Image (cartoon, rainbow, N blue to C red; front, top):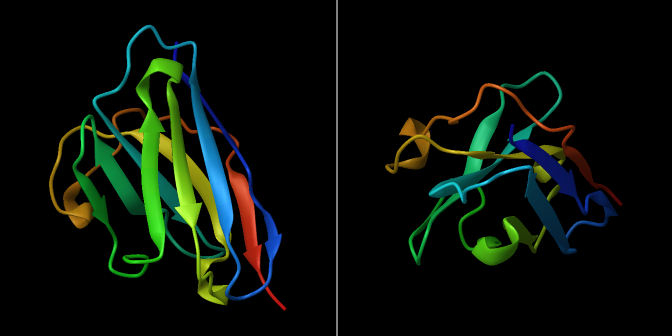
Amino acid sequence: QVQFVESGGGLVQPGGSLRLSCAAAGSRFSPYIMGWYRQAPGKQRELVAAMISGLLRNYADSVKGRFTISRDTAKNMVYLQMSSLKPEDTAVYYCNALKSWGPVATMVPLYDFWGQGTQVTVSS
């Protein structure tokens, strides 16, 4: 049984940075494609960053150039480095494996369960 444990969120001022971490605990394999989602109050969960084993990365337009996804396959860890944060980045952030590669808008989660997420609040 795979579990996702997210951490690293917090309160940050606009323009600041945060680094989120995701541990895929209990996994006996390394998911081929991993992604970071976020859900703001009153909005649907959206995929913001994805990474396929190796070098390919894909980002939502809203975070392109500001967020960077990375992973440590040996440790089953996935990271999201966020910089130049904006108030509209405020959300609960989640990680999940993804079924297949493609444009961000077309990728769907591999698992139908989620971790507890980590809250990111961007405010002055």
